[in-house]
Image 1 (spheres, helix red, strand yellow):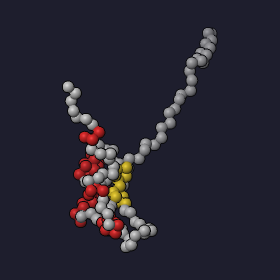
Image 2: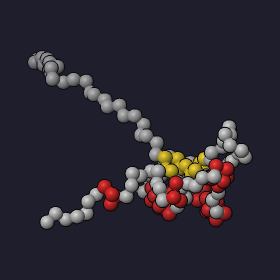
Image 3: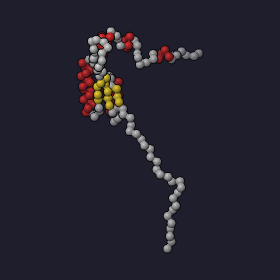
Image 4: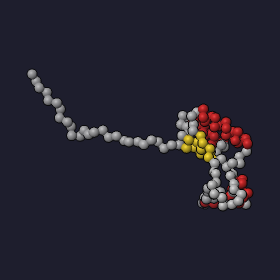
Length: 138
């Protein structure tokens, strides 16, 4: 009878490496209740990748129609299992009197205007035309 020895272990074979992947970062949609953020919300949901959380900041002085629409879109999100929260600033200490609880009362109490009403934008450095030259070299 012929005896067969088992093959010797190869020196180049090693244990399997595992890549540990963390949970994906949650996707939070800042929802302004406008047409652009609504389009994005609907598109994400239609692709099967809805946001993990949708947040709306309530300034406290929206038109009644906006609040009615907010109820409707909140029901739409609830039907699809999308977590939706509305946040609102509530002051705890007051430097000025009377205290204010919404943007309009803040403006009136402090005798100020939002910067956008004065033609300023706090989130940009200025118009693109100020930083880009449109002149052709000849």
